[in-house]
Length: 339
Image (cartoon, rainbow, N blue to C red; front, side):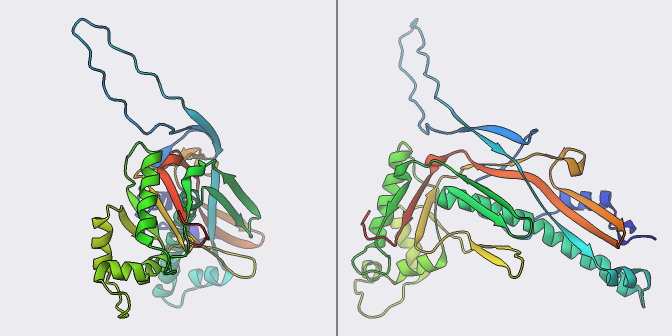
């Protein structure tokens, strides 16, 4: 019996070329801070950046010996790549309709639906990688459980104690969020030889708390009692005036398919502000046995005759890693202590 995946548009080589050249449908903000790095093993060692300062050149006399700089001490960590994969299953009804179409349009729709599903599989892999990047950046650790595969991934980075700060709730009148954010910038610079952070990240709920804080309203308009709402343009101007980094809002959610219902994971919790460097690490991508040990995403068609079934798998052997732990500072604005 022939299979749907024997169609010239759904053959493995065609789909592999399609996935390799396909551009993602959405921007994932942390992808630029964890650029792809190809590796050739499943288990890999990587260096941790501990010294972010550049030493000034020495002024020496003519005919004098040039001083030799002390090499920075490198800390290494080991990490194993993970296989991220899922599949599109062709139902028996689709098999019947494809080989017994009432019209050419009916069989064509099955092909189109397959490509839409493959696109979704590809996006899902990118979503998982972004969730891992977010957990490392925003929490310094990763805890991920897939109820269907029963696989758990968990590891924790030993972030320095000075990474974390606390503040009272930004909704409180006794908190000036701008002062708290200024102190977070100062903490980042203390950890990074006075280099300023590149980004300030929070979710929309946290941002709106800052925008509605009476101290912020008074700072902008001189009166906090008239019920005025702060405009986004005024917030941007104020952040710039106080030397705060570029603001980015992260409201992303990763959806894990559960046994009975989907599990939604927010990337960034409420009442949390994260400032971080431009570059934080890399997304390691390694060889996959499913792709003849080539590096990168792979597509595999699987056919079975008992029962008659077929599916298309999209996967990748990969893991993002945080190499610059000093490039992150985290403020939680829900405690009882001021920064």
